Image 1 (cartoon, rainbow, N blue to C red):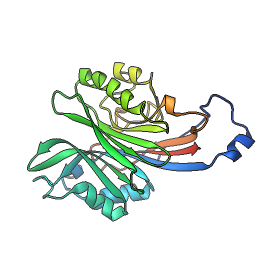
Image 2 (cartoon, rainbow, N blue to C red):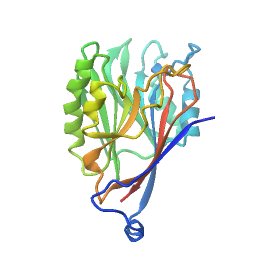
Image 3 (cartoon, rainbow, N blue to C red):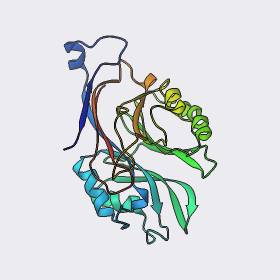
Length: 256
């Protein structure tokens, strides 16, 4: 049975009343963060149909995908993100981090609606370059990233992520494989700026026997205001053991 964690709260400079809520339009948003291990399952097979099925079952509206191959040798020259997106009738946005096996490797965003704008922010990574992919939508912004295995690089990337989030006047969600746990110095520093929506006891890695929480969904605290307020959310970790990570899902209501 899937575990659902439900949290109810209001983040605002004033307390919501029924009249306040009625004056605002409720928008429900379903997000997923998923490290897909370049589309290869634990059985060693690349199967984009299985990945599409996981997102379809979760009714995901925006998916932040990490470890994505684009026309590489190991995935048979396929633009993986677009192939998954076409099965779900979702728009695909890819941000390469490195050249790899004749193609590219990086992160991507799948979305039910076309982004209003997209851009890529270079982050720190000694073992390999890292990126933050930012997609703007009408009522919110989503950032997708896969941070470095090196702690110094992760810490050095925080100001760059915060600088990007500060540019927006609408809710800024950060999703991805952050390669660190809630007990870390990195996580503590991030908490100064971001509210992590998934509880620290959500385990996402390794998929077959999860031991740690390194995949996260967070929102930039200053973008939660009386005009754009997060009032309800729930998160859950999928039971799927396709990739070496489990998918992390969130259902969020925004009053705007």
